[in-house]
Image (cartoon, rainbow, N blue to C red; front, side):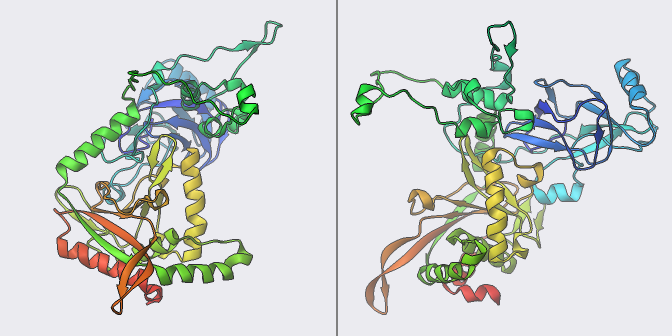
Length: 462
């Protein structure tokens, strides 16, 4: 069981995409694993034959426990399976010619730079056979999910959905992931009304969230009156703290308690930027690309970070690592809270590529189909509540990063220009910074650079 997130200590095998005896190519998806954050796809990083499945679907195991054996080289998969069924162990000094089923282990340097990830090692288990054992868990960092209202229950607390007979004694089995099953139970959705979009028709989280039940019309509804649900005075609802919410609570509390946050806010005139966006979108219309203000902000942030490297950094408590590349975290609202997919090497992208790469990344995050390397390794994060009409707010730092930018709404405000009060499109940006690493003047210089880039977009090209 690989460590697919920095807060993961155990995982549930949701589904096996391959069965024993199947050939496996490098990079193929072999299983779906549910962590405390999402259901994630697990890849094979070396080819071979799936000799033995050691953990059945639905079973939860700790990080580091063997879940499958991949026979590589000239090994006979049947003999390897017998070896593991008999419990035999190969000599520790045997050299592994193949590799384990799972994500490749992150190097020490990339792990520290990224602030956590799939940190693991391959331990030999026989000539040509290997199992994946994760290293010790990293420090708990702010999880990809952040937000309120999550009501998911632990996997072990979910009762199985009974099969419904067809009248001839044959059960119609429902193929569904545990996460989708829990959400359906919470929403009161009959799984038999859904059509699965996952492997072999399996119902996944996105299918449940997208389901719109067809309510039978009532006389009141036919008259255009939708009766409000009955409200019971004095009623309360107790929501258990599930694993995901517990991880969020622990991480955010740790961040606020252990990191000396300070905040700086700057107002930016984006009137010219808004006009530029309209002109550029007119040129890109034939390419079916439509830029948003968020794309310009992301580009400006990347340039500002390049010019102010002290902000594009991570801190492990003893040393500061400044990164030449910008791996940009983008906060995305999902049904269970908030997830922060990471756009790797965002500083190398132009506006068009930022839009083309960001859209699918966000879609995968909302559908719960993001990969492990898409939710880890960020060096700086942007969080925006502008679409909710929020003027300004302060975000909590996502360690080991040392800063996070909160973006408010772009709105018309009365401002003074040439001693005249005029209406301009303004936006408030708030930087939360770790005072152990970033000083007030350093944060202010970053914001001043960012303001200049957004008010004079041509400076992004200099």
